[in-house]
Image (tube, rainbow, N blue to C red; front, side):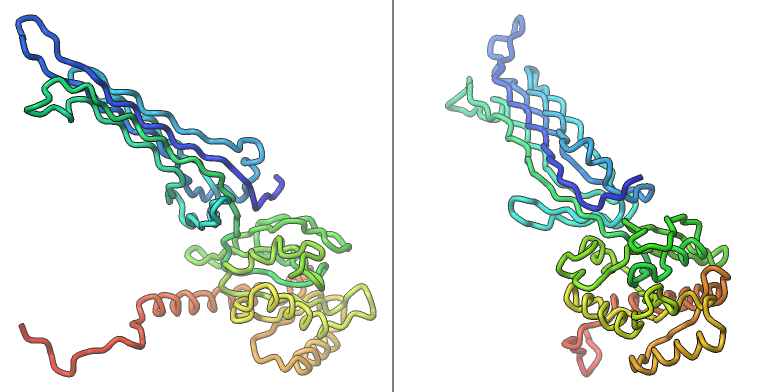
Length: 360
């Protein structure tokens, strides 16, 4: 299935039904009075998160969604039937923006979470609401209000715990296919990955996490060169970045140190917040070099970069170091989740407590 991470759709809520101008007319009842009922409300449009979807490709075929109008009221104080709501399923991580105003309506991040994007119109009032001591036969009614109509931009940012970052042919697709059930395209030429691939890494029965293979980036990615910022944004939702570095690049003049620094520059240009995320260096393709030479080369790169964070040496083909890497990643994610939970409930620095206990 082709990956689509942006789509334009038009949503229209239903119009409210009109109020009724009716009078009670029954045999033997001389003064029936007004009995016009209210109109039903118009249907609304909701977006609902669905964990089974991972792309916006369905919106290439259906771009317009219109909810049902409410029915008008009738005599005997009968309220018209309300219009049916429309629920449109979207993948988790969908950000919704009004294209006309630029307003960010919200984002869908949980399964079955609903987001109201177009409010249905209110039903009109029947003439029964306007009777009084001086106007016993009102013919006044209120029509139903129109429903909201919007053009929405849907933008998908994949929800993953770990993001694989690196230049083309760094071994990202091979790694994700080794540690998960994902089967991305793997070949010995650049840009074999044209859209993000998600894989679930299962450590044991109770522990697992989602890993995302982001298409390779090159110099100028933040300005749109190559695959550009189209996929850089997907790294913003991850908790941990694995920066893959090819120890045995095809081109002899390629310097791994320069590649790391260049990619850091692109991250800084696109979103400085990416540089604050935990990031580990993962040296790949160690099987293409003698063991001692591979480790020496990795240590030289780490020393030249003055790298102070974790780094590992792996071979996805021989699976050397991959299992240990995933174990360490899982342990680190547990730490990060705990830190996020603490930060969420942490009191602000400005919070003050009374010196003495409060007494009623």
